[in-house]
Image 1 (cartoon, helix red, strand yellow):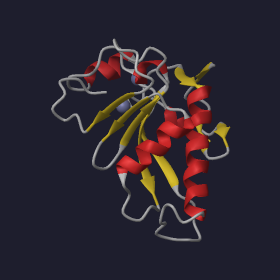
Image 2 (tube, helix red, strand yellow):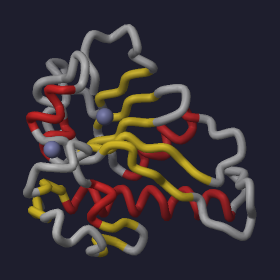
Image 3 (tube, protein in one colour):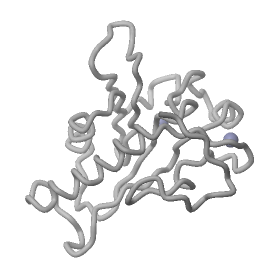
Length: 162
Ligand SMILES: [Zn+2]
Ligand SMILES: [Zn+2]
């Protein structure tokens, strides 16, 4: 379900650990902000799952008393902002409010491959793996081969920024 937030309500809580402004377009000007609530819910489930796996010892935390956190470096992007990114993918999932570029806090030696597998397990259908971050999205139209998952690994060679 898509919602249309405005910059007037940056602190609106969308889930237990995420507020609206975290998803806002970085151009800082456009409105409304398109946010897919299914994406927010999946991101929250992902955060919860990481903390559950940490409590089971499958992921090591830096500070045991604190949660593992997820920071959004990019959520929704408007057409104009997307076009300003070098070699931007013209039909990026970020335009649809169904994508995030994320980093993690409080994980000791984060293993991006392991974190990508957990992202797949909670239901993300597009995952990009980089040295220090993941791109996750909820695309419904995966690719020409209709794989269950669109997965790419450190595509710095790739001509399109996703
Ligand atoms: Zn914008
Ligand atoms: Zn992305």
